[in-house]
Length: 303
Image (cartoon, rainbow, N blue to C red; front, side):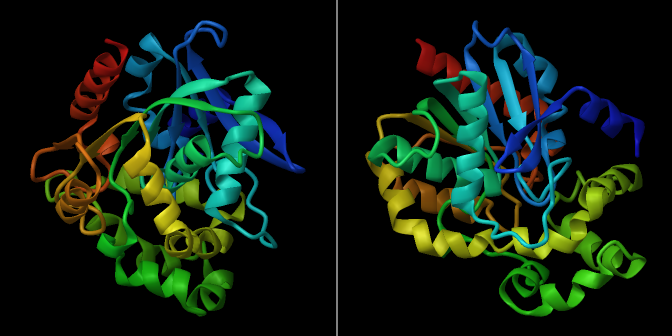
């Protein structure tokens, strides 16, 4: 494995979630000191997505970042019903284990859906573990409103058709890499395309512990967005929790068009648009800008 990924993994530990090993990292201020910040990564990678902004965040927060089941360095069981509600349960279980009862949230992609589920539980009840008080939420690019979400063709084929199950035995092969790479490239901005070295790291994350065999199963979370859409959006519209959307506009899945929908749906919306050449992974493509706008949101909440 790449040395940088090895260091990231070595800096974390595992906890038992219903018999499965879940990787997580805690950094920055002591757990009993806070303030706490929960980082919820997106699909299909893992907590390493946050590595470029981690050092600055660790100066101000107790930073908590797990890898969701089926991704990264966490367990990747094949016979498993991957769902947003279960991902939310896992995050609650980790926070309960750590004794964390309140936290700010920074979420991206699939993490947005998990954050929406946590917010709905915050507003309407139904926590599986503990009782998390959400101090603020900052959303990065993700499918906050499924009616505005425009996934790539390969994403739709792998998660919504039998193709994912048919392709599963081939995952990790050179052929599967050639299928995945164009979709990943398309999700980055015109000036921020991943280098061959970064793409190699992405593949190592995806393939760790035979992870590409379950990639399509994890990807079926997009269907949960239809099931829970109204409950999640009602929570966002009714909450007193301060929310900010930081959006990379050239993201083909959830860029400028998703921010436009956010402005239409959310009362008193707080939206920050990044430069036009930033796309789906703002924390990788424009880490300094994300830090600036995220910390400004935290400062506004604190004041």
